[in-house]
Amino acid sequence: MSVANLPQSLRITLVGSGQVATHLGLAFAQAGHQVVGVYSRQLAHAIVLANQLPPAIATNNLDFRNQPACDIYLVSVSDAAVASVIAEAQFPLGSYVVHTSGSLPVTVLARPDLELRTGVFYPIQTFSRNQPVNLATTPIALEAAEPALTTLLQQLAASISQQVIFMAGPDRKKLHLAAVFACNFTNHLLGISREILLKNNLEPGLLNPLIRATLEKSFSADPFTVQTGPAMRGDANILQEHLQMLAPEPLYQQVYGVLSESIQAKK
Image (tube, rainbow, N blue to C red; front, side, top):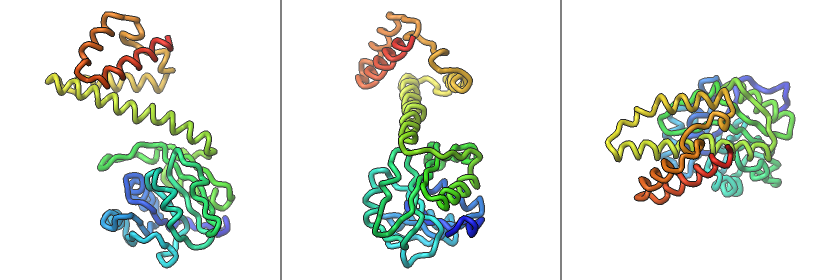
């Protein structure tokens, strides 16, 4: 497909039916693209998503050669499954195939026998079931070597997001590492905080203003420069008391200790 012949409405096959595929598929459809197929190892899962994206066809067959023609295949399965899915899949010769992983290299998609033209479409966002996501404000990191695929990915990303960037694999891996700290670890710490409150019959909502203020400060200042709390103050008595309170939860106790050491090391 030449750049000049690139259609405004793209035909997309989703290889995967999880949360990333679901949110992206719905966003693509809303932007005027057509999801023509949904693959899942479990056909029932593919059917659930395909029913939300008519006229998409659900399948649990990785041979896409006799399935509806499309402009691009978007592989959105777990990182651990990408290599095996690609090894088993049969795509039309010369297909555009991209994955949505923040950590995997584009080379994981290589299939020289099929002459696949490959790339990456990585939305820098967290996706959970039944939790809406504003993809318009979500950065999307792209990677592609071929000019026509570069143009196609840019068109597709710009149709659902206001912030589209191109990023090489090594930088994307570093971005993903930072995202784990910013998102996954932060969410886990909030979960620990909520658990402590609930176990002590305290209302979790009491911390909402504090959580909001903490996050808002991090958007406008270097977080290390606005750090507060007993570790930052070097309050050994409070630190020891908190560690004793966490004795019934040795793992949480370790987390508290390691984070306190990290805070003090940044003073």
